[in-house]
Image 1: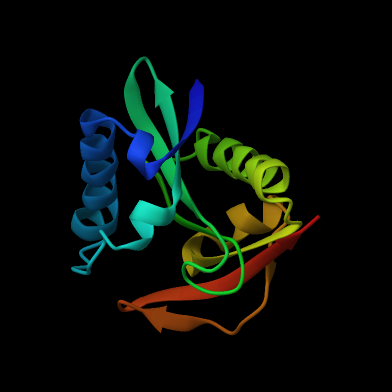
Image 2 (image 1 turned 90 degrees about the vertical axis):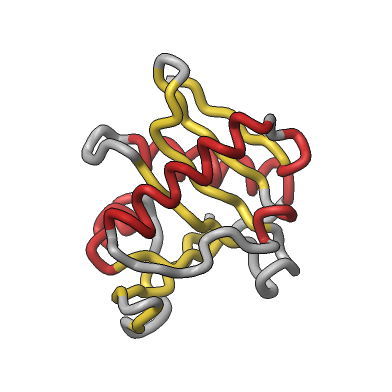
Length: 145
């Protein structure tokens, strides 16, 4: 397992292609949810890539404070293969990065409700009621350390 974090401008063309391919495969095709996945926040974010045998198998982005609000955020958490611990490892690495690089001690995300227990097991707590985003139930969650 190889975890790397890169700023947008440091991604190679192939890395960016594979990120967008994975996000599209899961969020748009698998979940049958047409929405604008690629956005301007991508250019301001740090991108955490998890590879196994040179294959991108999981991904998330870390969005600095001020890009989409007053808090640091984690978004686009996706794993090609489920129940292998990829998301948990990525979340640990992301929290460590946020603590070290930004000096922050909290992060928020908007979790799909079906994955709520994953985030709770990683120390996130709900801070909102369930809401619909792109016809999928979400809940806003926060982790403080």
